[in-house]
Amino acid sequence: MAVAVTTDRTNGASAGTALRRTVTGRLGRLGGRPVPDRRPSTAVWPPQQDDHGVVTDRADEEAELVAAPAARPAESQYPVVIPPAYCDNDPVKEAPTSPMPVVLGIDDLRPLPRATRIARTSREGIQLLEEHRDRFIDELWLDHDLGGDDTIMPVVTLMEEAAFNGRPFRIGAVFVHSANPIGAETVVRSLARWSYRVQRATA
Image (cartoon, rainbow, N blue to C red):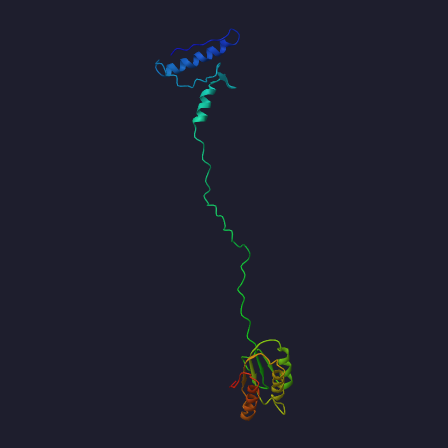
């Protein structure tokens, strides 16, 4: 391998000696055979030395950096999930439940298990209906005899007057469960005259 080295007399002696050692070592490893020069033409002269006195070729290093493929970024082992635009992160709201039916009863003795409120006298019955004046009453259970001289007729009169004034009580069904057949028939006939949905029943 022919190497042409041109150095000046001031600082080229040490650099030329290092280059001859490098070329001689390469030829010795290859058995004295010439090695084709495949380095790029942008070799830097004089050869550069690192801090430890080892000759390095920056052109070779730059060529290796250019030829090295770019490292791929590390992929996450968990996929990235993008929520849809309509995603609602608010707390889950319970579905509204239907209101409890209003079942009123007016009876002096019976427990009336279906009733949500019970009045034991006609006076209490009137007060109970007035409290529900602007509410819908699903069921109204009436007894005729309320003990002693007290009967359900004051309550019936209140319901008749409300219908006469054009503001009848909003009641889904009226059940008359009295053991007094004549009194029960009187209540049914009086309320039916004012278009209340009333019928005989057994409590």
